[in-house]
Image (cartoon, rainbow, N blue to C red; front, side):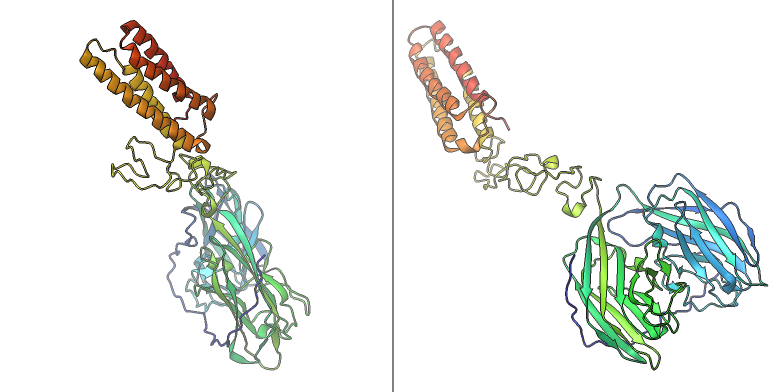
Length: 533
């Protein structure tokens, strides 16, 4: 939990009216999923096949829509419907998922206007709110934020039977469900996962000026949260003796806003003194909540949609704008709490978000990282080399002093990085063995001289190998059966054998070849005691 004090600015805000006239024709407007950097959305549109259906007075008409074969986790749901009716406010419309989750789209909106929902798209990412929209007779209202939150369906399996329930609660007007369809958006590939929940608390004890359209603004700073927003909840401790005087807007650091309260609650007292505003399933729309005087109404779906903030960064200054638009009664913002859930992409579906995954494309639940270089063993080509120049690339970062084009300190240009001490030593030993095996008996004086020169060079290599192993004995992980002492003894033995081999040039070819064979075996044992990688 993260808690911080409120920094109260000299709050001022001239509230703007968010109701904008949106006149469109009867062609449905396609809905869009929320913006997101962690999800590539794929959207399936499915239409009901049991329509048209008549809507009669004082009854509930149900239409069904069967979804099959779409991804098993839905992230965003939008609905487009065409309902013809000659008195819009008669209608209560509810969408029910296969899991039984109910979301109220509209109740008693549209006044006496005709056919305003004859092509309406309900979408949490819309701008206009159904409860505040300025309806016009025979003009389709779209896109609209519903009374409930369609985000309540997020995370459910959309496959199965959906229901659209339409109730006509007054006579004498009637209507028809002409058609309806769902836009079901899911993440392609692996699913995002929750990263962290931040709880940000402020207790300003801020008095709200009576009948003042300038209002006041409270702020809270959110910081150090990872990934992007996938859910926001707001808790208000806002006692007031006439609830519908209050208007409240929540503004994110990016400047995006959503309406929390707008003249809700009638003349009741203190019903928002502890209310949680959320898009979660089970919350009741603020416009439909069965409020009781001096009883806290919670949980509530706000006027707008908290889903407006999905995909944004949570970090920065959040603002809560409040005003009281009528005389006499007053109230105070005692405390407010933001609860923010962030989510991240999980490319390899190992349960660790990409921001914290040390192997983004290789599943590794344990996040093992033997050399603690930030690259997990699952994707580290040299997991036991902590001195590598870059994560996942072997080597100690020594400059390429010989400019041979082999990066990271391959001073011998042998393809082995200098700090891979065991591999370097193995390479020395391998070269020594190959040269020992290749030494030939000299039949004449000239050839014997060349053989002595070659043996001298091999002896020099042996001395170099011995010194190298002695210097880096603690850095070399010897092969099974090998130790520093046994390898050093082998080097001493090989050196003696080669010195004797020089003398055998004066004896006979067969004696020379027998000793050379023994020296080759000794060199092989040395090579075998050293790691090749």
